[in-house]
Image: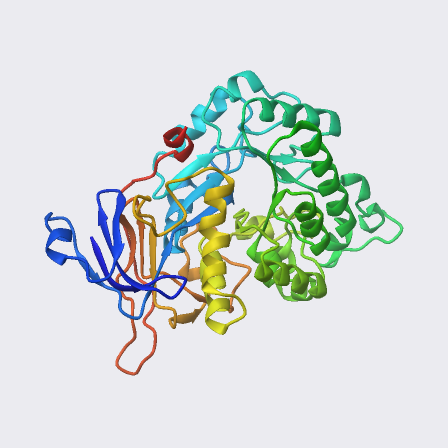
Length: 450
């Protein structure tokens, strides 16, 4: 496969030649005859297009086993590929939770239909089996929940310290869901002195102070154990700064970057997630930290639920929103508008997660790296609509916002997604997306790398 005249994130215009699963050469005026020697290759005119490394989404919930009515590895991974995500990392709060070697093996089997590469995290509960779990090719230990979320896997400080210490001994990174439940505002819950049932009540309940305190705890434990600790879905500038100043890495989600409490009147329970949406001022401050380099990566916390499940009261609806297909398009739209650079988008979605989590074959468009590539027309901005997406839940919190979606996605040299309707009609209007997916190509990247 040969991409001709592709523009990279840093503005270079190059040819990129792929051989098998690998980027074989990056340069100018590469020999087309050599690139197209095999019958199954093709030349792609990428003039005027961006060629990016595939996004590594270090935080998804593909819901299998136990909740396949919400999402499956087949549907979630296709949604990922259609959004330019070429590697996903699945979290442990399934049913059963991924807290034993046996549960890990079950999930690894279920992940075989994945269209994209994947990593599997192990979880921590009072009933976990660290001996068998650390015997498996864990991507990371975590999401370790310091407060309950979907799956009721919240743990206390003593078990947290024990788990992080064991992870350090086994040279496994730890990702942390940082909220301190003792700082939640119980007064706004049903029966409380300030009882509320409006859409904003969840944000009032799970306070910003609860995140900051839990990030502080994670920093302290990381220092004590010398473990590699990563803070998941940081939703406040205070949390980002605490992690950054302590030398920990952190991620932010698209919903915390592009939505705030001001959107909750419209979103209702579809805007309930953990951590919750914050004030518009905090949202803007987190985005500033993304743009200036303080935030390390963007990860989606893709956590789908059905419309029927979300159609409940704010206290009964499940927490979580889908996002794996829209993260890179939303960021590319920001780059198109000039609020963030394409290089920064590349770094927070690909280069940085590859470096943080030890994936030397991924994350950059360079000779010798895996050919995980995303081709986009940077001017092909379109509205986002849930019924255009490929997640099983068929809705999005970003309805009506704009994004720049891929025309083509490759995973280790295989075209796993192609928009067969890409481009504009005779009047210049973008044609509707039309997806074509490849057969299964996904591999467990940690099993491959370690």
